[in-house]
Image 1 (cartoon, helix red, strand yellow):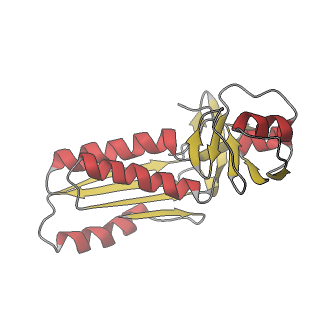
Image 2 (cartoon, each protein chain N blue to C red):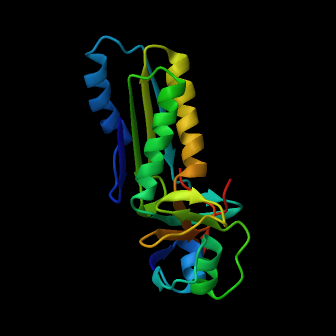
Length: 76
Length: 143
């Protein structure tokens, strides 16, 4: 399956890329997407979204999903 | 209801004037709640020269809409306007405008406060400040 992965703000800088594509049948949840793309421990307070909705670390992922990782938000 | 996330500078007072005239004409409006957030030149003990606002296109708009819809279920509102900038911002520039129109002040004021507070915790925006020595830092949540 194919998953689009996006990184924002300080996480994008840490990982060194804004976007990635995961082509693997071995990932079934968000935490595994992080491990595969980031190759580093999960930062404290890391947030995740699947298809632009906030999700938990254990949330399942499916073919065609858009997964995003980012730090706590600071708008307004 | 209108949600706008834009890169360019905007004048919140001109935007408000247009909306106010239109909504007041209906005769139903008794109260306007307004919040304008502006970039100040200090934060967390340091001089701030400017900042860059990053966002998640699509998700940001979606969550701003949800926040406004939630407000609309909790208070009696006639209309809601949210404008939020992204990209480079100079000190003194408006960053965000939240405006709510209602028949009564309690609805307008409480909904306006709810929207700006929820926006700050739910809408995916990230501020990166440029300091006096041209160093840059990501802003901590809550500051």
